[in-house]
Image 1 (spheres, chains in turn orange, purple):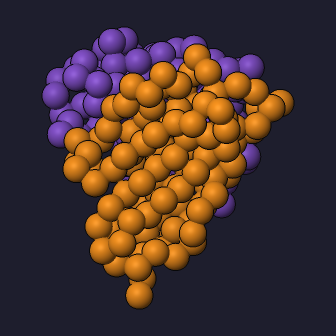
Image 2 (cartoon, rainbow over the protein chains, first blue to last red):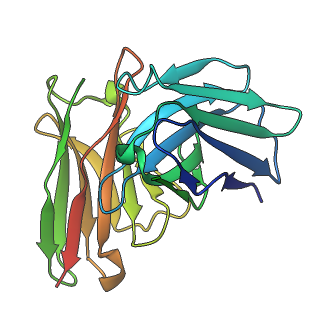
Length: 113
Length: 110
């Protein structure tokens, strides 16, 4: 069956760029929208943005200036880049297929020096 | 940015019925907000229970149902089970393509 797996560094220094990849296995990335969501420790969910397999994107206005989501259909992957991170960006980052019927297990990214 | 509001916490007795609600700071919630409901247990990813107001996935227990109630989206649990104790989040989509999660409701079955 289709599975999602987030990958990337678990520790990022303040002011640096957070980079994560979501790999889609067992199925094609085509013809779906793909989301990034995050959850700070002990807090609620925050939608970061989504990308369509064709490359169309939509971002949370509060994060838009720092976030880029891209897709690589040849690798069946989509990625998240967030610039100028601070401790407030420490969270578990999830990828999910729209309509949120399929989620990755999440990966914890800590922002610390 | 729109704020989506949920009850911070609710308690239900085993076998009882409880309704969780999801409101929007911009006005009444309608089917055009395509309300979603998610269940999240500690250490796990969320899973969708309800999408587009009242639609269930194949894995959604029959005791959960979605609706619109008094200008809010609602999730009703009828016949609560101990395994239903979890955090529940709603999500609304807005006409300008914003997607906003509610703050979550911690449901205790006691």
